[in-house]
Figure 1 (cartoon, rainbow, N blue to C red):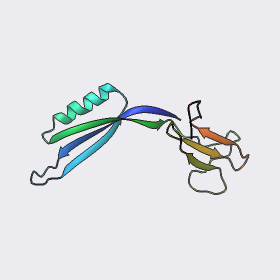
Figure 2 (figure 1 turned 120 degrees about the vertical axis):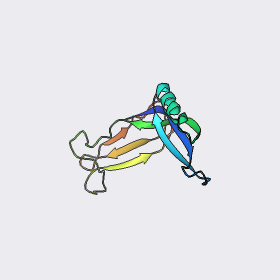
Figure 3 (figure 1 turned 180 degrees about the vertical axis):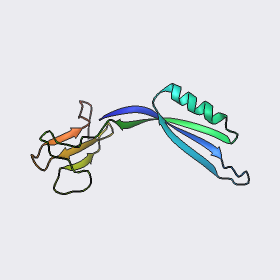
Figure 4 (figure 1 turned 90 degrees about the vertical axis):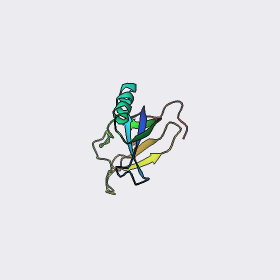
Length: 118
């Protein structure tokens, strides 16, 4: 896994019932400027479009490890006989810390980098 930057686009529409003051919001995460442009262009064609916002966010990308290098499975659903998964906050966004119950090996994912402080 690794932290990647993407954009969270929020599009807001008036409710279909014109008498209602409510709005509907839809959020989607996209990774390129072209995807942002296509999403906004499509939304602007809708007759009830009000506005959009976009913000840069970081998200974890990739598959979470399921097995320790020794072959034992990590605890993903609360089974106390398997490895334990914890979350460690950090300036980069955070890390999963896996502790194998079989061999006691500790694996941190994504890897801790030189600029991580947590």
